[in-house]
Length: 494
Ligand code: NAI
Ligand code: MG
Picture 1 (tube, rainbow, N blue to C red):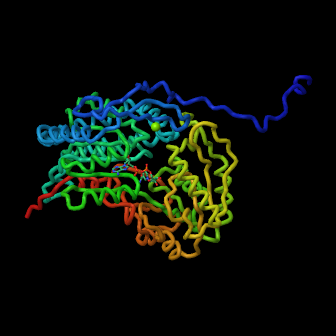
Picture 2 (cartoon, rainbow, N blue to C red):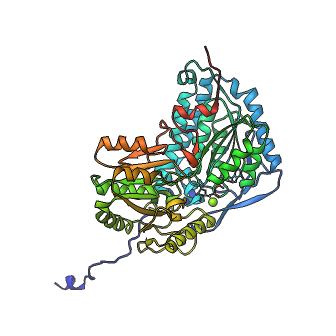
């Protein structure tokens, strides 16, 4: 029995190491510099200015991108205008569909590379970029490819025609997916585009430029200008645009509205949110816990429709909180390229500071903080999954968008009180309802002032389903048949 005695004691607190995903870093061949994509070619910026894009999980510089100035924006708009008038708007719609189908298939073909690029540049877990961002981006191109030659069926008796040049400004939380939400419907409707990615995440857009070349998309139909908010402002100010689609902060959304006041430029805004995720006492608690976790810790909480306010019916407050805290302790925070990571890096130092500031305000105002024990990497930008209890509706953490992995928990007694609390926000993008009763779901959905209401699920997306806000969350819808309308002009037929 000697061999038994030599066995080491039960390995209770062993450090488990997981095998890395096949989505390895070297799938993306990074160049030192990426220029602007204008008129089908990559060009150096006339501004002669460049900026670095870093990996938020290591803080290493990955590459440099061009900071497009006014002349660069001018060049891009001109290229889009020429392509619109001389080519794209004149093509038979089925031809446009062909290119969209090609782009969709190319996204699928190069999905691993795109997923790695997204996680490297933006810090989101590879599991999410691989299973959510990239497949959904392809799905949007497939979906809108199908509409390209059926617009008169989408809008009977209204004779739709394209608007012209669409200026599209996107954020850093879902870089490739937001690109797809913007570009696919615009092209399907016969518009050409100038797209500006966010300054912390330009990589997947530059790879998309490569896909456009690979698809032999006519030059100038898609133009991509990188740069920070200044580039976005030049684009919105440009006289040659016919439509602006913006996703980002409410603050910048308001600036854009002011800029466009009195101009014949169509506008859709998809802005922030402070969604309520509402759990009734008859809900399946374990499923609800998964939905709450998915609702706020998915993509580090960098989600406009994140379920950042949990409203729990008082009678189940204690068991639900106990389950939720236990579940939080199992979340793995760390390397975005590790397929077992649940919570990746915070997108930028600025965003991390914003989260820290709001969390400090929560403590100061009197809320009780809970964070599971977890070791955060030394380099890079990280924030542990956090929840606050003892939160009053007036606290900043219950009112302002934190855009980080931070949940505020409040309680309610009756459905009417849940509705009142849920709607007590300047925003109105989304909400979640957890209950066994179908009638209660409908009752709630009717009263919640939110563009999307999920029932017994959260953060579900589908290209066929419209998405957009009420109040300060913006206006206009993206996705679905409704997502075509902002890219069209209509001539009513008697
Ligand atoms: P932001 O609104 O400044 O950035 C979004 C995009 O707008 C970026 O491409 C940026 O370069 C561009 N931009 C900035 N200033 C502009 C201007 N004056 N004219 C035209 N374009 C401009 O958002 P930021 O500073 O990155 O994040 C701040 C907060 O905004 C976040 O903490 C979050 O609360 C919210 N946000 C909401 C998003 C959403 O999905 N609705 C996405 C990103 C941020
Ligand atoms: Mg970056």
